Length: 111
Image (cartoon, rainbow, N blue to C red):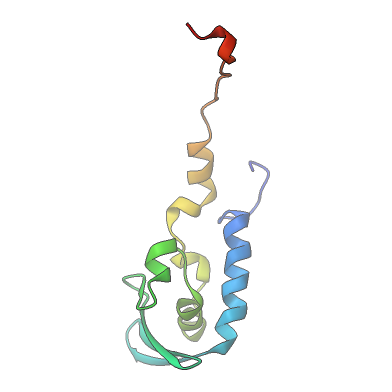
């Protein structure tokens, strides 16, 4: 992971690409500032990019943009990575795994 060049972890990039494909079916209407109304098939969702919320609940649940938020960021010409939570960034990943884990003895060694 230390050699990885990106800012956001690679597994989240894969999910981002999947959301990008789903966003092709979304039609967004700007409602003011960073709020959008998104038509996705027969459903309508409201996205607020400042609050990082979507009425589908996926943006809040996963902490990275759902396809509806992806569509809204595309309209504003913003980078999708700016809306991914910091817990998915490379520095956070490295900090979590920086401590060495020690081996655990087998059951024979238990007291």
